[in-house]
Image 1: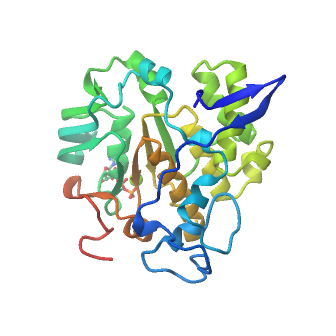
Image 2: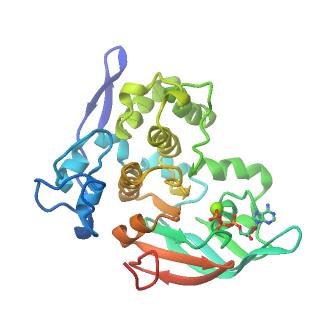
Length: 326
Ligand SMILES: Nc1ncnc2c1ncn2[C@@H]1O[C@H](COP(=O)(O)OP(=O)(O)OP(=O)(O)O)[C@@H](O)[C@H]1O
Ligand SMILES: [Mg+2]
């Protein structure tokens, strides 16, 4: 990012940005021709790209091309981590799988087994949906990844780290490298949008100068540049979720995990959130998203991991929410 973004003069908010190479949306979610496709709720478009046209930030009637989707609002902000960030990473992403569950069992106090003998590998750069009925173990899976919980048996690796062996004093550093997005947003209510995002950078010791540069960039990415001075309770649910994504991504984490990020949002708003996560994934960030949202999962046709009663029952490369079903 630093390579193609410079500040000039005395105003660090003045950005001069050269767009990076524009990645393409996959064929099945791309609008091939700009034109007349309506917004998804008005005209549900089977498994087509039109579903992804409820763009961030604005209202638009025509389906954009892939180029349109990537041309705005702030391409520089969606680049992957800088070489410096990668060097300082404790996870060392890019040198192997991002996540390895090796025969993981997790039992809560009271003898509730939430995950049972789960083995799987998620490579760096993948986008993975985690599905399953209520109580199947999705949130447990995610909470293990940020070491909110520990495995009862088996091994869990994130990057090059065996989480069972990670000293508790290192856990905050682990969490700095994993962006987290939750259903209930978890924003700081007394801080503005910009301050919520800046807080993440303050915690990681960024300079004021970098914070003043990065915050408007990332807010522009999520389409909230105009609302940086608002407080969370002055935003819609979709806008609040975009703030939480901005906050999760502003450090360009190697891994971004989202637990039901669209759970409180209407279908149209959910598509905008999904699109943001997809764009983030295209920068190289591994994204794991637990969801009940059948429509989104079916349309994206990404890898689907399904849990049932704590067991891994499906791991499908280009899946639909229900096996065989669309
Ligand atoms: N703190 C806890 N103590 C004891 N049991 C728990 C705890 N948290 C979750 N469980 C149990 O572990 C199992 C898995 O729960 P988990 O929250 O991982 O499911 P989930 O797939 O995220 O469900 P949902 O879709 O409803 O969010 C459930 O049986 C649940 O009751
Ligand atoms: Mg859950």
